[in-house]
Image (cartoon, rainbow, N blue to C red; front, side, top):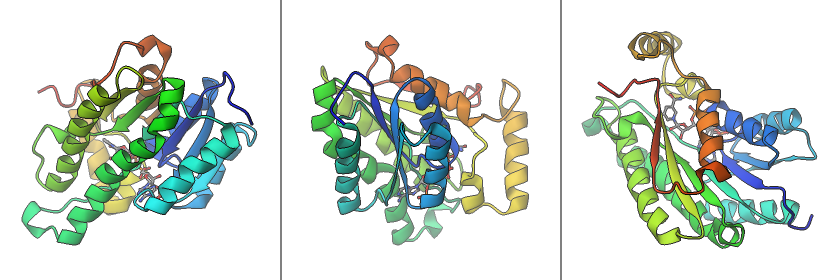
Length: 249
Ligand SMILES: NC(=O)c1ccc[n+]([C@@H]2O[C@H](COP(=O)([O-])OP(=O)(O)OC[C@H]3O[C@@H](n4cnc5c(N)ncnc54)[C@H](OP(=O)(O)O)[C@@H]3O)[C@@H](O)[C@H]2O)c1
C-alpha cells in the first residue's frame, strides 16, 4: 500500500490489556493498526476484532534488536507509513530492592526503557516524515515510592525523563508524550500475583481510588487517543496522569 491520508499506529504489547484497548480505540478512530507482542494468539484476536484489512499482527520481542527492526520494516511494507508509535509493552514484579537480582533489574529496564527508546530511534525517520508522535506508557509508581516496586518505578521514572528529553530533541517534527495510569484491571496482575493477591489488589484500587473504582483499559485508551490526535498538536513532553485521583494524596 502506498502512503495515504489514513494514519498508521504501532502498539507494542497490543494484544492484551491497555495495549489492546488502545489498538481498538485507534482502529475505531480510523487508523490502520499494527500490534506486537511475544505471543501470537492475542495479537491475532485483536486483528480479528479490528478487521484484517485494517490490522496487522507482528509477533516479536521488543527487547530484541533484530525483532525491532523487522517490526518497523513490516509496518512500512504493509501500510507505507508510520504516524504513531505507542510504547506500551511492559513488565513488572513485586520484589524488595535488596532482593532483586541483576537479571531482574535488566529484564525490567530492557523491556520498559531500552526497548521503548530503541523503537523510538528505529521509527524516528518515518515519524518525522509524517510529523507524527510517540506515546510512552508509564505508571503512577514512577513518582511515589511503593515498597516492592522500586525497580518497576525506577524504570518508568527513567522512561518519563528520557521521553521529556526526546520531546525536546524531536521537536518540532515529532511530539513525544507519556500517559501515566493508576491501577487498571488487566492481565498484568496475573503475571506476578497469585489469584488471592490479585483479588486483594483490585479491591485496594477500588477502595483507594478517589473516583471510586479501579481503572479500565478504555480509560487509558481515551487519553492516548487525545494525546495522539491533532487536538493535542501543541502538546509535547507532558506526562498525563490518568488515575482516578489515586496519586493525588
Ligand atoms: N495495569 C495497571 O495497573 C498499570 C498501571 C500503570 C501502568 N501500566 C503499564 O501499562 C502497560 C500495559 O500493561 P497492562 O496493564 O495492559 O498489562 P498486560 O496486559 O500484561 O500488557 C503488557 C503487554 O506487554 C507485552 N510484552 C511484555 N514484554 C514484552 C516483550 N519483551 N516484547 C513484546 N511485548 C511484550 C505483553 O505481551 P506478551 O506477553 O505476549 O509479550 C503484553 O501484551 C505496561 O507498560 C504497564 O507497565 C499498567
